[in-house]
Length: 241
Image (tube, rainbow, N blue to C red):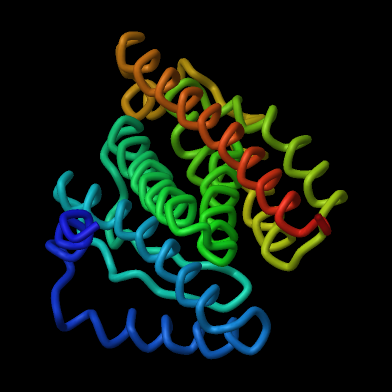
């Protein structure tokens, strides 16, 4: 965990810590009034880990990027101050968030199992579910930015998944994502793979497409299994013996 923390903080300039720290503390204060400070602190930490995965990946690819910003009940994000030059760079930056975020959530899960802590398992579940949700294949979620390397038309498959989730578990965050996704769905519907600008941006070798597609499916499968297993553990702990 110390090595992971050093990796995540290595690219973050101290001048940006105030913005990130201030919004983190605001989110902590609000979440703590609802679910207690221990769960709130753990959940915000996993949000931070996820976003710093994006941050470090963007810096590795030479992109100017802002520090993570936290908004209660919405989540957190980083702002790219310049757009990726091609879809592979976009997919790389997008993949780094759920990948590093999953490592963080699994670390909390192992800690919770070893200490038999329901709070830590609940934090791990929240982190796993967060990263799984972000893998929905629809832009602007990470999954949409990853699967765009295959084709933006994949977003049309993600739209009914997002609608079903919104109807099943309505929330302001999902509603906001749905609003932001609508222009991207129009873009996917009108996508012309032969247009010169699309060939320049989306034209990557099939080997690269398969590598990212395989990594995406493997990570999604792992998160599905772990989210279900941890949910069952928590349900078992809640049942009277």
